[in-house]
Image (cartoon, rainbow, N blue to C red; front, side, top):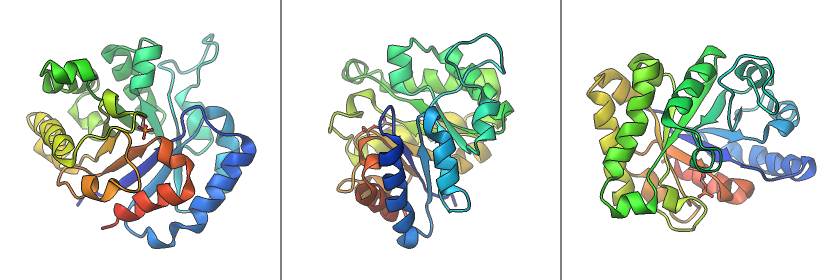
Length: 251
Ligand code: PGA
C-alpha cells in the first residue's frame, strides 16, 4: 500500500520566530498522526533552523526548488547537494508559481527532477492545468504532457523515485477546491498514464492533491482511491489545520 504523505508548502512566508512556533505546534500534535508521513517545505533561508528543530522527529523537510546545476556561477540558486546537506528529504519541483512567474518549462522541470535525484532528494513534481485549460477541455492533455516530459528525460524508473502533486492552478490559494470527483478523475488519469509505461511504478507512486486543501475538505479528498496525500499551502501555516489534514490522511 502507498503511505499517505502530507507535505506543507510554506512558500515565501514566515519569520524565524513564527516558524519556530509553527514547528513546535506541529511536533506537539503529531501523536495522532500514526500512518501518514508529514513533511514541510521551507524557504531555503530557514532550512538550518528547520533542521535543528526537526532532527530526530518524525517530520521530514524539504526545499521549494532546486537548480539544474551542481555548483558554479548561478546567483541566487540552490544546488541539490546544498539542500541535502541541510537534511532535506524532499524538494518541490515545477510548482505552478515557478512555471508562471519564472517561466519554467516542462523541459527545465524535467532537468530539475534529475538534479534532485542526483543529490538523493525525493522530488515532489507539481503538475496541473489552468482554469482556461480546464474550460477548454484539455486538462488531460496538459497533465499528460507535463508527465511525459519527465518520463522522456528521466525514464520511468526515476519518475517512480519521486512523488507527483496534482495541483489545478485555479485551485491554488483561491479557496476553490477541486471536488473529490474532479480530483479523483485526474489522479486516475495520471496513474493510468504512468501505468502505460510501468504498472509497478504506477501502483507504487504517491500522487498528492494540492489546491486549497484544508481541515474541512481534506477527508473527502483523501478518501479517493488515487489520492495519496496532499501538498498544502495556506493551511500548512497553521498547526491545527495542518495536523487536522495529516490526521485525516491516517484514515
Ligand atoms: P494552497 O497551495 O493550499 O494555498 O492552495 C497549495 C500549493 O500551492 O502547493
